[in-house]
Image (tube, rainbow, N blue to C red):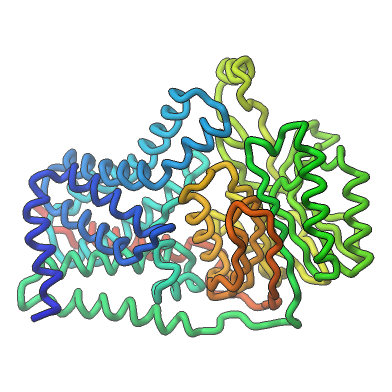
Length: 510
């Protein structure tokens, strides 16, 4: 009797909400934002999606498109509000331009969900367990993967990230975040099927719901990778220089002194890590300072890793890099491959770029790093390195895992102020550790700097917005998870596509 109360409540609620599907979908999209950090109400990720699946039970293809679009507007409008801080507050773009760019992103992302709603009503208008449990979950995965790749991609607010602290995260080492998304969407479909089921047809969706969650719990316990070396001390130096002061010429010497002074007490720690673009200079402009820090570090047995911009003498461009100053090797560089559109490069016509220059806005593109860069090594430890935004692309980070025993990410989240962006980004980084089965060292400019274990657990965490050194230990890990061994997302994409095709094959013929 008690177990039927939530289902009965959902039936009554959606019976009323179905009268205003677009408005209800908008509210469901806003509600799903709460499944992501900082709130992290992970059950809402399933409930809100189940509600959207129920809304798509009725209406025309055009109505389905409007419903899907409204859900996307709620999700991305509420989940990426912090872009205004980055574009206007620190990027100094006019308010109108900032709002225009934000609206464009929200509309583009929402269009993918509009497509799903349209196709659902056009091809799969007949309700049934196949649609809720197979077709819609598969379609959801395909849409989320497509929006993460098309037009440079924007993988933020992917459904699977909401489950990083649940049993469903057990699917991540097997098929990455999109397999977690598929499992979550199947749970949402099962809940929708339960809401619509009569007394004779509730066992299948209930059993599937329990089975998906239970299997995830079993997978969490599987040791896909193994320790391969002794624990190693790490010190993360978080300077917390405000973004609006960082690149001021008057602040330059103070910033260099800050990182020098914070690092002095931890020389002797095997790995010392500074965040992305830690110093407000090009590497070529700070050669004496870098030599001084390398000498101080190596004399006491420390390897120094720092985010730094570098000028490419041959190409005449600037690259965003991670410089590794090891005790036994020449300087090594890793350069960021996946740049941030409208942040690190500007896909605009020449006339728009000229207007940006005349308006004192950023207008020069950084140069991306090439694929297949050598794996940097520090203290004999091969590193899988990423810089800021590119760690949102999980499948792009798998190649180094045949060698790398530790993940290192350097980030500058100061662009987003005191918003949910840093918390969302930390959740994304934790998923990368689970997928790889490796420890992660994450050094950020103003937080959230952390050391993460191979199951995604936060082992040490620095406070935000404070100059601080976070100390801890990591353990080198070796071996490949199934996700890394398979080489990316193709397996789960095939599974999702098969689910959609099964719905096409079995749908009623008129």
